[in-house]
Image (cartoon, rainbow, N blue to C red; front, side, top):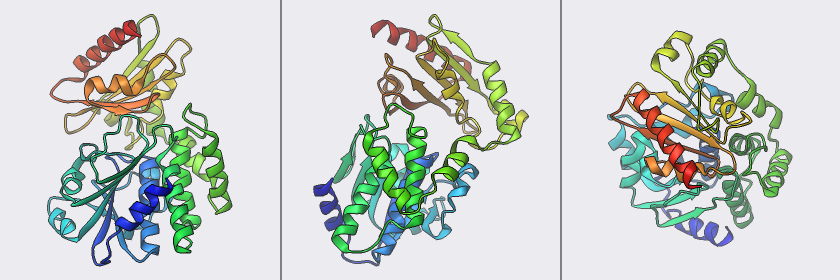
Length: 337
């Protein structure tokens, strides 16, 4: 990381009139938004103008992070050219390709200078500078190491209480409260340092994993009732349709956590939740145990992620047909492993 941090710091534009833009992946989660905002806030402390570029508002489930509105910019067809005119250096965090950025893809692809910081094992960086550590539990851990080295080289305090909290949310989110297989000893060491800088582990954990609402509970009930087991109980799959979302009045992000419950069934080694989106796209969350590589499987469908957590999508097909195909591919994958 040390050599990379020096190269990135030297890569920062000498003219500070241009905006350093930070691009997380679409459908933001705690890790990508926490990492992105921590970077933008730190760049502001260094005298740069920096914004996190988003395709839509930050979802209500992450509102507890209290992210300053002045650090984010929403891309629309009317504002894209204006945002591009301000663009200097572009960072991609928690993703490495524009294809994972949704409506922000074109803006990132047009950037003349790109830097990638990612922790996905399936990452294929499209940038002049990149740092990818597929063994890291979260992208936030990598960002903390980068910012810490910048603190040492500039003498400026970058990771204050707010930035420490953004990064802690990222670590807690992607490590499953330090319980997932990707959690390393370094995850705890970094978390300890962030706590010393003021991060609130307890409040973050409650909002990320425990806080709920009636619509979410009812949606989870419908999804569990629709669950199917296949391959002698090794594969669990369920679907979430737009009709289910409407009937339960479930908020955005209410499906989070369902796939983990399916994975935790004692016989299951691969779990899938297939969600129907309003644009006709089908989004799939995959969680697995030893014996089934989620990232490897997701690549069959053009997706990617981590060994135990991955995602992919389907287009130009109905949800039942796509569920059937996933089951068939999972059965074939199990036969090969």
